[in-house]
Length: 303
Image (cartoon, rainbow, N blue to C red; front, side, top):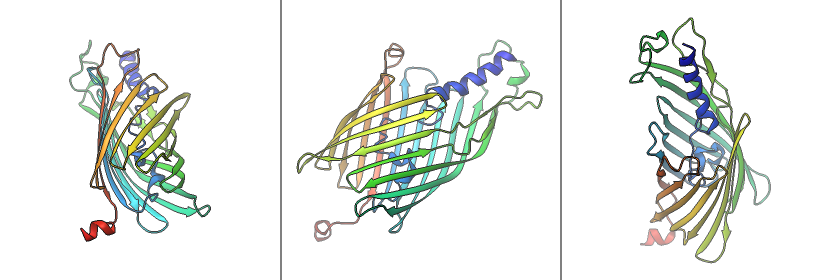
């Protein structure tokens, strides 16, 4: 029983140590609302974005993540949004949904600040079916699934100058909700959704009439573990972009994407893993699709 208990703990703690208790995204600078809910209201239109990530392809039970978000400005000062997600890591999964309210106000003529709060729920599940066990009659392994449904919240703030730069922070899993990892009354095996801190920023540099360069950074920390992503994206004529992302664990990502008719957005990233695991995986793939509901321009109306 002690060995089984250690297995549960290692699954959960292993997820936390590699930042997988919160889904990882290489295109964080594009689906930024999924990182910081205070992004809502930064632009004067609504957006829908979905990301699908298959991490460490070739490794059994590697993380698989799906995210869907919608967010935008509801009025001069209010931004609204919503997010649903599913993150599968081996026999464990984490799914949930949240709604966001963000209030935006002026700090100066050109700089604004957004404060946001997201509330919803998270379901953490352990599926005990199909495990190869030395002792299949262990009472801890009786039953099919262990499911925990707990409340969840995220606080975010974001300081920005529209279409130029933004810098903000968020605290996901704010409530630090407790999880019970066993369904046997005589065994106590508890954990929690650990409170994280994310710092996210981006700067848009106008190089010419057609070209923009957008450096970005994402810093994530939980307990005594931290990770930093540094991204660089080049954009041509607001239609095509390419770039790269470097993670301080040695991973490198290549980014590619384009906009169609200023409304539809397609993106792809490929992660080249670090030397510790590159013998076991061909890399990670992430796909992104977005729709923006920008007001029609005069040229589009006359057309």
